[in-house]
Length: 248
Ligand code: SF4
Image 1: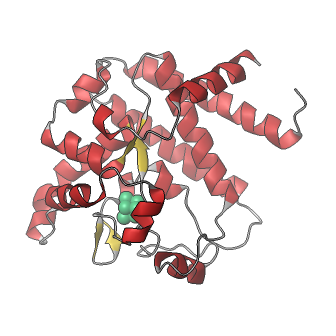
Image 2: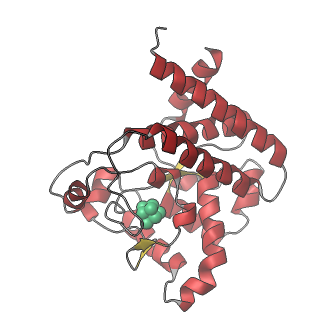
């Protein structure tokens, strides 16, 4: 296979990330805090690498407190869902004192959005249930999908959210680094016999918040979020791609 330098760099990066996640999984196997350890690694890898890859790119329009694009469907892996569930449980009392009932908001959003694909979701123009007072209340544990969607044009974001245009000029380094890190984590999870699928966030979080034992069950190999799996992502094709990369 002929590959250019960028493709070679991306594959090397994927393999290095895969190895790092494999090491973390081995270190934390059977321990309660495996999910936070995995996510701390994925967040810091994303932030560190995207800062390097985005050097010299046009400035981002995204800033803290902007939630213009937060009407999109969010897809996340099981560890990301479980991390958000941990955060929500820990913050629940304080949030309720501030008048924000996050579990109820998520359940309400799930009723309205369950089974909707990306375009049906966009047509609803329904804000993510985590937006409160104009900001994301789970920002420190927001999924990789949210981290990797970074815009160069706020006007375009507003127009997409209002249904006046279809797409925004997004930062390719953010999208690529997010995808490589998330896929490397999934590949390492697969090799270590954990369930590595991707899920619709509201539905999966509704399941996670209803049953605190989801995390230990997932660590024991159960597909606890199977009902929230995203059907258009083929795990068979992804697995074949992972195997080809490792064989190459
Ligand atoms: S989780 Fe946070 S960053 Fe992601 S879509 Fe929802 S509000 Fe936006």
